[in-house]
Length: 176
Image (tube, rainbow, N blue to C red; front, side):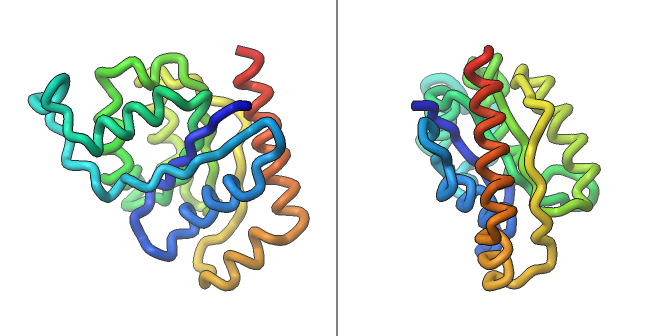
């Protein structure tokens, strides 16, 4: 059983990115468990002086979750042509740890317009030594109301796309 950690880079209650990672967890194929990380909003601002024995509990929980995962999926919005601060903060807590080193990662997108954030996030993650899967997933949910998002994510073609993306990602993980 492969364990994949899915992280939404959005704190918004009705986030399309959060809906996407939840749908990935719900549609995980057999042999794959997707767990959604929900602690982004509880992380204190990264401070290198608070590492090692001073690492806050919320940061330790994130580090442990990434360490235990066989792979990581991140879905995030784009704010001002960049990665949201909360997600960048979470990644900063991982920088000096081994959790990200050689960890397979995949990006998932709920908006076709988040091109700057995609490029920035990919650069950050490569710099941290994540191993990025070249494939990914994009399901256009931008601007949709929660009921519309739910209906779009339940469409058979999108369920198939999610399962196919997860199967391809698990194949990537297993091949490493």
